[in-house]
Image (tube, rainbow, N blue to C red; front, side):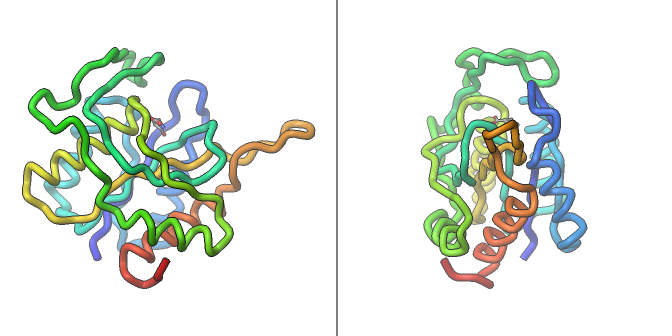
Length: 200
Ligand code: PCA
């Protein structure tokens, strides 16, 4: 199975983006994967992704990003047609309620097998949950862009978005985030479910 997996560069206050580190690690561990680290910029990320979809014609697309404040791996259910964030992207672009695709649907469902992935993760003791949407910053933009491309081109492939927590941080008594190895394990479980090698 020809799978494209994407992550993002650092942005805002995120100095090391675990989604980038996961993708780099998987590129070494699973050389058959197509991997891509996207700039955290609305326009450039979407362009780079559309080019990859055109050139590589993947059978499935899994995009990753970090949601610093979430304690678990979150499988996103819906991509929505809006860009709206209080911080600019890495290119300095600030979006306030703009449509991503003026003629596009209001929203698209993820076409990843969310429930089987969720139960595969939870069975293996990895904190995971379904999230109803991916926010309205660059992650949602990329999720929406892939789903829109797939619909426009009549492709019937699983694709969706997964947010990971921030990297593990121990600050005195307080521990936040998740170890990188556990996130890599979680994404490998998702990929195994997608390939049909693992049941939920
Ligand atoms: N997280 C941001 C954008 C890049 C990333 O890793 C988001 O949740 O939109």
